Length: 200
Image 1 (cartoon, rainbow, N blue to C red):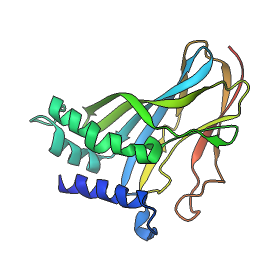
Image 2 (cartoon, one colour):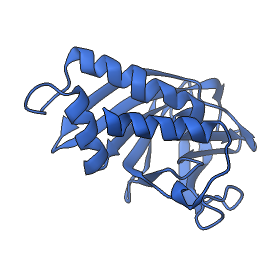
Image 3 (cartoon, rainbow, N blue to C red):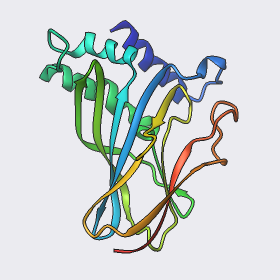
């Protein structure tokens, strides 16, 4: 629990807005992708998957998994949600959506599930948008990153953003670096998906 508690404490300190130091470089790595979920042609949520690095996975497995480390106990799963996942609300669950240049902060998630596969911990959850967005009439962009750069989210190389749901529009997805949001003193810029949609 000591390593996990230290991680959560570091995130809490970052949330206070204290000056960052060179130690803010990534300490946790997450492989990630998301499915953009549509309802009646409008984006309403993102189904996000995080696959944690071996080291941080091992800490969570040690603290929360059943004997043998193959799965989480019901109690451990609940503690992961309450102690690790839900505090991420402060950071919008590392999920960033903008509509016509205005940020739509993610404040609620549902369907959280933690699992273990090949020794790595996987979090899956649905991030709910505060309002539905029609990408056919709205400039929409989506990114998965930690603005503090304490955690590095590594987008799936081949298919980082997928589309699913009801009346999904015909969309082209352009992956670009968002030069307006520098990370780690401008050394890096997050890759975001910009949607260009024309119809259902």
